[in-house]
Length: 260
Length: 119
Image (tube, rainbow over all chains, first blue to last red; front, side, top):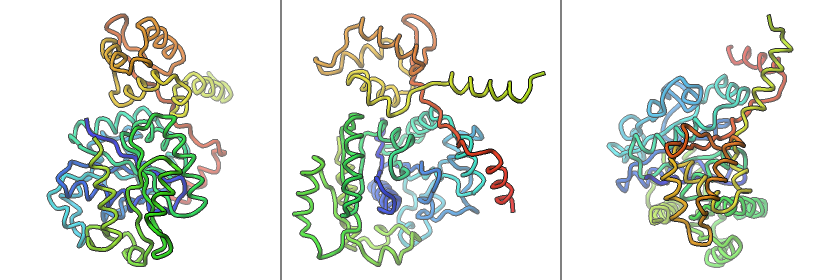
């Protein structure tokens, strides 16, 4: 059975979708069969990193949740259809599927207004793993703790919690870690993003975080303008593989792939 | 002919009957039941022999007796946290997750938003 990797952060703006997309891409580059699902139905965004917008998105997770199609109809083959950007073109022919959430205002308002069948969401994710023979399904979640994020934590084999070196993030991450432990998540990994360069002794930061949360810190990714300049137009770690951010992200990807 | 209040009442009653477990409810289960429920979330459906095998694979201190497993399945089914399809040894169980409820905002707000989004 393929592994479910939930990417979570207690607060917004940690770079969760950017990290999820790049981690999934790195796994696909290494020959894995990978799915990425955007369960941030209220504020979807990961599709942008794969070059999708309202005009070329096709069926969405919302269509599946409303019973309009099957989950495999939503799976957009990045390797076949979106290998266009300078970074993304490295994914040509790779087995990577994106399950986007709708970016249409009416669809977002409908799902907030009417709710949805959570059993259908869970069964859809499990069926997707089976039908696409996925090695990994990455779930990009809504920040904070709500029903969807708790479900994604409960069904995950690996939970990656992303935090910034910020006191609000530190406290919120403690809550997430507690909940994850209460739900028996066995493989809990941490990643620091947006660390101000030259401000911290990375070894010291790593030690402090690992002691605080009793979980391995898999990478410390620096804050920098190059990522901002990329503006989610492309997959940064594929476009700039030698960049310090990309090198740290690869470490995180390798830690995920190393989990038995 | 049913009136609007009858329909609303039915809707409220149906919602209450829906039940189902949330991920947070899993936290309150015993460690062994929580492990089985998590496994069922991944497997979608498990029959009784599969559940017995799952219980047998738990570490010794967490292992449930057959009687405890049977009682737990009865309780979880009665709470509508599990759905049982079929009876006896052929019964198949699946987790019943509580539906994500819709917004409680007045419907007029949504109608107004829909109108704006059409433009």
